[in-house]
Image (tube, rainbow, N blue to C red; front, side, top):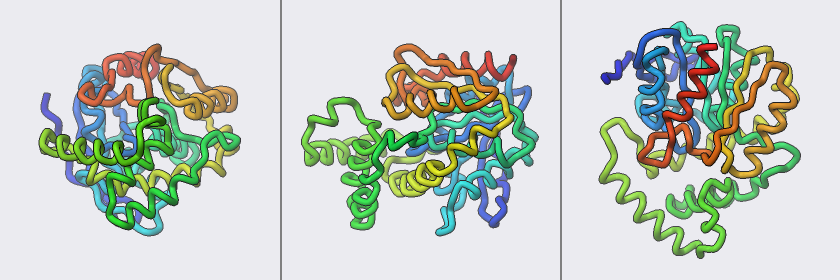
Length: 286
């Protein structure tokens, strides 16, 4: 199936935001998470393309979109999403991880957003996750040690497998270097590498910190919300979903058995896009 490559749209501050579209039917925008780009959810978009026109946008610093600016914050991300929604006429949004924070924020700011599905936003509820590791990640990034920075980020955000807690850091760093090299040899023309995405984590961590102080505001959303998550995801993500389920007035929660935080991604990286697509179809077509 061919993806249409659209001219970029211009966000409020003049930055170009690129996106691709596939399918027919009502518009649905997918906002990817950290260490991802538009291509990370290509298989999910194709699975939904029979009933929706799916718009895969590249958040700043990735693929077709322009770079981050020093003033980058949640308002910037929402402005970027708004530019895509205005250009496409889409009113439904699916946000993944840090992209789910953007989608949730959009329900407060964008009247064109009708329904939102969010997959495990990394909202910190009552100190459910320490972010002390972010300082080390930034230091390693500034030194140009991307492998160490990625190890720090994975361990600190609890996104790696459980064995990460027992493997010595030097070995994890060496394995990450090998993984980056192998990935770069296998990447498709529209995919972003770990090496290219590592610096963008800094901005995602900034969104997590900003959202920490906005939890009470999210309880004011009037949008219909699907809370989608995996049974095997880190505890702090499940705790955030518990909080949202209790706080949001029009929220429905679905837990996917046996799946984790990467469920919405392409199969090559362990995702189960067909399973996630079925849950989204049920929500957005209802």
